[in-house]
Each structure stands twice: as structure tokens, then as C-alpha cells.
Image 1 (cartoon, rainbow, N blue to C red):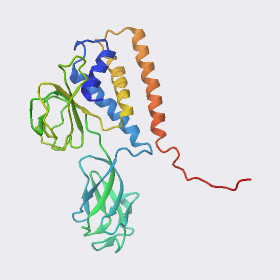
Image 2 (cartoon, one colour):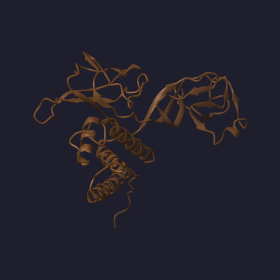
Image 3 (cartoon, rainbow, N blue to C red):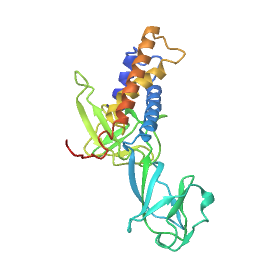
Length: 281
């Protein structure tokens, strides 16, 4: 489900055939807030949906975290595979500080300082591999301001993030709005790169004749929950005129779906325990 579909679903839930109390930009903002809440919940589970790795090279023992890093998890030397443990506190840095270019000489420890990791070893410059929880890119939807072979330019609004490669790794989808059901996929591609002004590199030829929506990188089983959470948030707007019974139903449905999704997330590693084999009597 792409962001444009999610906006339309939320609007249906709010009984608005067209924008009245809620503009698309406002609904998208609520969808992104819901996505962030779900992402935090996912980050606390054992599923590790949001874990990725990247090559990092220390400069004078200091590693700058990747821009999409939410929380570092594990660090090791790339060449030797030697793990670099986390120090419990920066106050422990002098307890076993080593010297030299490799962790094999002295301490294999590091500590976190803001958006950097400092290896507790003087002059450490060996390439490392960092595993970390990634931040989830905001959803975006709108009408492309330009499109050509291998390129589409996102609409400029308050929800678009003006950072290079922010949307890299995100799938963008367009539906043929001219079709009878508006459900025929006209274009779908992974964004491999984007400029700070929203020009995205894609595979194929998109069009600016139809709107687009990005697809959340969270498991698709959570996408409908985003819609319900955004709807439950939107009905709190002072100008809302939704019937009280409808409000109660939306809140109840949101609560039920949230419970089901949380349980599904927790079941990611069901059956992952070791199998014990005993004697048969």
C-alpha cells in the first residue's frame, strides 16, 4: 500500500470524498507520525526488520554514524572480524585504552558520543563494519513536478525531506488514475538515489500524468495499522464533524488492530529456540 492509497483510505474513514477538514499534507503528516510510532515498536522486537550494515572508517579513532542510523548495534573490524565491544560509559575510556592501528593491540572497545563512535584506541584507522537500526524514511505522495526516463521529481511540500539520497532504497508507485478502478499500476520502481531538490533516480519511465506514493519500508502487515492510527489522530481535530458512534468504532478498530500487529511482531522468532531431542519411552 503506497502513501497515496493510505491517504485515500484515511479520507474514506473520515467520510470525506474530497479535502474539506483535512488536506492531503495534513493526513500524510499523521501517517508519518503513525509510521514512526510503529517503527519504534518494531525496533524493540527481536525481528530486526530495520537492521542494516555499512562500512565505516575511523578518522583518528572517531567514526561518524551513517545519516540513517538510529541506534548502533554491533561493530567489528572488517578485515579480521574482531568484534569491538561497547563501553558502558565514556568515563571508562581510560581503564583499558590501547594504542596502535588494530584492535588486536590493546583494547577492542568503543563508546558512543552524540552522532559518533570513538574507538577506545589511539590513532585507530582500520575499516570497520557497523550494524545498526535504521531510521524509517517519511512517506511522501503527490503529483510529480517532472518525469522522464529513469527520473521523477517529487512534489515540493512541507512533508518532502530535502536531503540527498534520503529516499534511496524506497519504492515509489504510480496508479493509472484514468482507469475505471484507478488500481492499475502504471509505474513501480525502487528509488536508487535522489538529489536535495527531489529528483529521484528510478528504473523505467514514470509519468507526471498520475500522482505517486512511496511505500513504507516497514512490513506490509503494519501498513493498514498506520491508516487506522492516522484516522484516530485526525478525528481529534476541533473542526471534525464525525458522528460519536463512528469515532468510537474507529478507536475500537484501531485498538484491536494495534493489539494484533504487536502480537504478530512478537511472533517473528517463534520456533527459533533450539530443538531438544530426548529419549522415547
